[in-house]
Length: 251
Image (cartoon, rainbow, N blue to C red; front, side, top):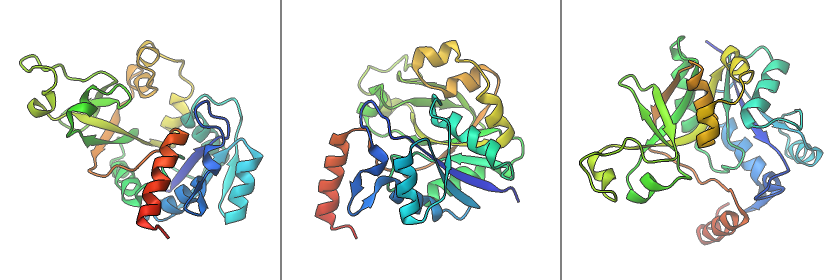
């Protein structure tokens, strides 16, 4: 059985929400909630937080978690994961867990890990059927098209595919669209390889790093999930979440 590590990239600096990993959510920091949820995934042999900030490291120490210091110049969570993989070479597969999803479902992590039962799988991610018209046209909700084997053909912020015989506004009724859920899995050797690639033309155009991998010949296996967790991107998102949790009286 391959050894799988879950890595949670967490940085303090953020243009839209500085200090986001340390915000309080019903009595626990966001990074603690993500870590505790990830630890529940049965597929993971280990969970670590990858950070470049002493304040985050101190918080992880406080609640008894594991962390690895990484370079502050990384451009993405993928790059941060690659550094951890170099420092912890005993793991065969890396699951990159978003640090701003405090209620991520462990079942999602296990579903993604299950992609690697096939040795040919290099990279993997999750997708979710889109059921609302609004999401089809939302550029902040990347779409993905897949082949008959579930491999990603292309990711886009535009609605893809174009529905030739359907009026805009009703496309979700004419075709099954998929939304990309931003959790990734990588075989360690593939992770090291993709982080050595320069930015690609499609990646720059769409601002989606996974297009760099496809453009360079890597394939991304997908699994369909019906689950989707709440991501905290802005202080406004946090305010809405805390109001909801207060109403639910979360323990």
